[in-house]
Length: 114
Length: 116
Image (cartoon, rainbow over all chains, first blue to last red; front, side, top):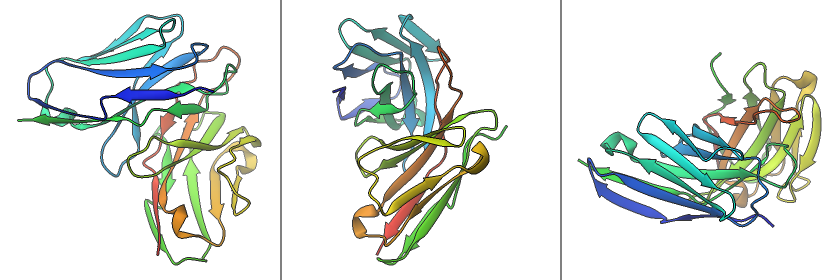
């Protein structure tokens, strides 16, 4: 059974710091891994999708890495800003078939203080 | 393309009433998913459509829940005889599926249900 864990559950940093969010999964037979951002009371915004054949993906100040063999992904946020404050969720497709249904971690709630 | 759209954004209902939510996916996406999210948790999969066919339902989806996707376009999720435990955020997502396809999921803004 696939399980996804995110550590830490919450993180508070001063503005300008570089930071790393962690995501681990128990079954390495995944097609891809996706990182999302969720603002309070809102839906999910897709940040990055890493295919299983890729090691990392970058979008602006965000860089996500994937190590399937160890069952880990990290989301690196450079030069954090107060506007980055949100909950960050990682998700992997459930099962080995590419149906696209996702299993999520519980998220890391990030607060960036001005 | 305006992305995934959900309606209503918020719904307050009395216990025992029926409610229906609507989701309009990204137009070219053939896959549509419903998830439920409670406070402090990640979303949990409820059900999945490929075109108009409902291909999978989670055990979380009791017989009070029904979902449809007529003509493979918009979808509705109905909850009958609502209970307080149904209070949650209901999220809809869509993706472009297919063998070896890139299955990046795009989510709507969700419908927040409060059962009083």
